[in-house]
Amino acid sequence: MGKTVPSFRMALEFEIARWRSFRKALTIDGDREAFDELMDMCRSYASESSNATKPIVFEPMTMSMVLFHQKRINELEKKLSAIHKQAIGSEPENQNQFNTQSTYLNK
Image (tube, rainbow, N blue to C red; front, top):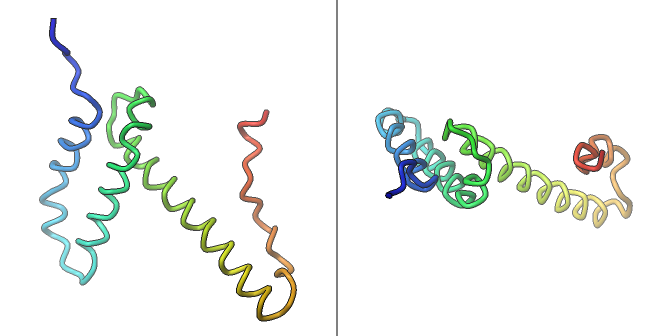
């Protein structure tokens, strides 16, 4: 018997294709490129997303984008802290205002 459910990668590409008319409607400079970057983020987490076992493809797509951006924010916070430390000679006072270490999974 054949596979009755398409692979996540196939479903992802189908979902991305469904957004093609939205992409074409983007007219502000940089919007199409930003949209393409978001879709590439989804593709980069396709293997992990396939383990989410969500029947709605857009949910793991969104989580892929959120995860990518959170990693980017963490990297930028580290760089900003290093620049601040180099310029001022100490860590920013409110650096730990938002603790990026999740305690959710440690419970």
